[in-house]
Length: 254
Ligand SMILES: [Zn+2]
Image (cartoon, rainbow, N blue to C red; front, top):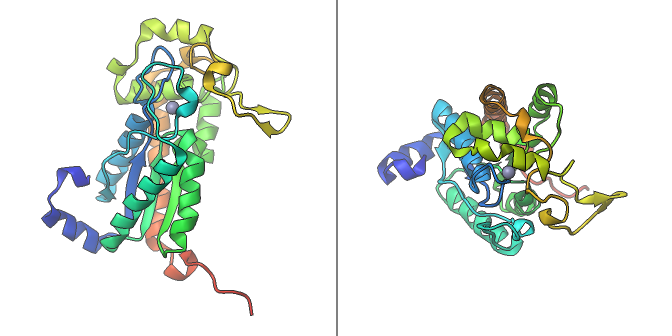
């Protein structure tokens, strides 16, 4: 974790390592029972666990992202996608300036994905290979959560509530879980007949949650956390071993 080491120690790390982690999330409503920091706290906890185990470069967490669609809920913070793209891209470039050109954005917030994917393409053209890893979209994590829960709600539902119970149970207000479930929507309902709708969360969820957080448990959270760490570790190992040729932009066809 760069915030905990000196430039002297960072020099050794940058000279030895090929991959850096940049944890990023959001500060946004997560129903009446979860903290506003749910997404960045989760991204940070996952990135720290894997960075510790593999002795990786890991930047401080970026705690505010693209969250304007939650703005009717008190305390939500956001920046525009334009600001976010530029800020994240410049952080990636500063990592690359120290010689590490393979980067994982350890992302905890769905609203950040599109912007991060765009900058990953742009960075590749600068010979910086960055990828977005969103823990809840990993197929093996999804297989596990399908086995653990009947409900499929992601935002402030059973999955995120379990993860926060595993990270720090004091952050979950259990007295509000029933209220979260009562006002929750069936899904994160931003599609209709194949179209993406420009809705805010308030349009389909009165509590800010999706589906049933009552299914959550710390045990389930531990399992999800562990599986997510395994998957991030596998991604880092691939990035450490893959050749520059494979990652680079290919030349034009003859
Ligand atoms: Zn979240």
